[in-house]
Image (cartoon, rainbow, N blue to C red; front, side, top):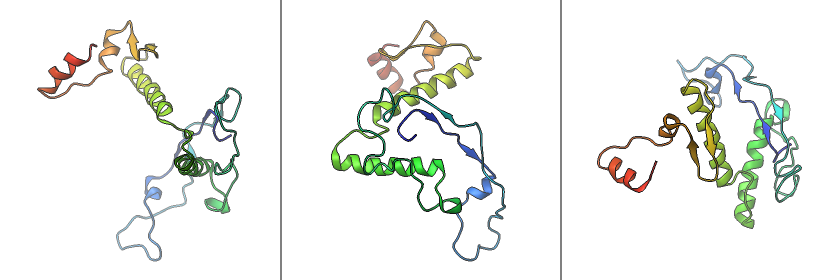
Length: 169
């Protein structure tokens, strides 16, 4: 399902196991690794639409240089995890798009929209979980001065005055 909207769970495990391992003998006093398996924080959820599915805009899944969701050597048991597959597919896509000058899966606009959604969710949590109304065309919070104030940060003098004279909040 690479290239479509899908919630891919972030895995959590013992932080010690995330430390890169030395090849050969471990240094004295170094990390003590264990066999704790990584488990997802949340369950994966398939989505709809996206580039390769209905409503997609552009190239189809499985195109050369995309990976097409196939497992490759590496990872546990000689197969890549879903996270590794997606990461590697994005790397291949990035290089392919540099060569072809096409838009990548995760272009700048998609990254901007994703960061905006995350920031709005964090703002809502800080404001007690209330709903925040967002105008995506103007990219401003509507009808909530406290939430709107969280969209800009405070800068040091003299930049605070200069920036506020340029940007009307």
